[in-house]
Image (cartoon, rainbow, N blue to C red):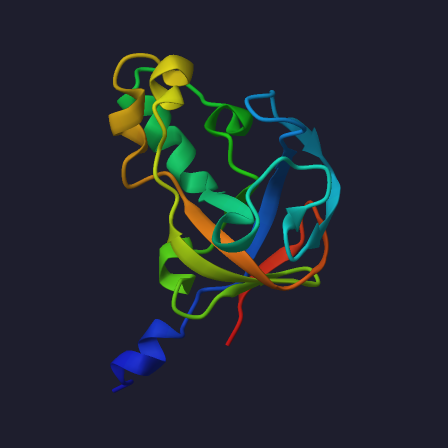
Length: 156
């Protein structure tokens, strides 16, 4: 029988980077891009926060859940104002290891809590719908370039 430590390091396969979004200014609409250069302070061209919130990411599998909780059929990633959308790997399970996307290495810092703007963007109940599904804030441990479809891997 495998130990709990071995089980925690066992992923079905790599994830995938599905979406990259840049916020050119505070409260500006996000712009979807195919690739980005990420420095220690976050994505080039993004009006983000350096340090522990340099990059925000969300699990693609949570988008339909959030949409259902606010009574929508679908939900575009740019509405949620996160930089990266990742699919196929459990981000919460990666938090103790960190992750690699292309050349980039990220360290999980804290859950990305919803802001009051979610109520305006998603409608009544938007703030509550995001709780527990809002993704993660990460710091950059190794800068690099990322591209859509890059594999997302644990950083053991």
